[in-house]
Length: 259
Image (tube, rainbow, N blue to C red; front, top):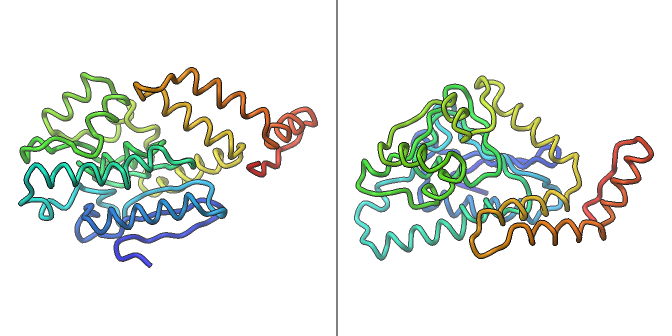
């Protein structure tokens, strides 16, 4: 189905593997278009509860964008490139109604780190290297890196990473709060799947509401507290709430239906 992606679903977890290992899984125009389709389809599938995104091979998650594609761009084309990427891929992932985990295996640079930043949770192998090296090309990050990195690690750390363009280790990324967990390479996907399975044992509608409420905290034109109150209140009208309370009182595991 896809030229640059491998996808499969196991036990409600949809795996999206960026499959350009010969190009260090760099994001070209076609790969971004396929990512949009793959994520969109997963979000609209009743068989999918959550998504894990990773890269093919052991060297790279995504080692950046395909620089040759935009080497001749002017400011108009550059703006179109950034706006289209934000709308169709990066913002869609961040605002996904289903949880998305990035399993970072190797280099996550430039657009690759920005892809991981858009995901809700990040797990990295201990050989991963992360950075936003755009200033070395005379650019700045254009797929949300200046905003999402700052939210995660703070202004000082973000500016140091962006202004130097230097890579950081997985251990430093964990210390900065950039990644949630660091594992051995062979444990990366099992660790991501274990986290996702814990998430998917919870009420689906509550997961969506929680993502929306947390995302509202970063948007200047939205009162995050009001969003939380609204989502909290609506939860009381769901069948999942009734099932969750009944299961708690009856001391059994809940059987959520996403209703």
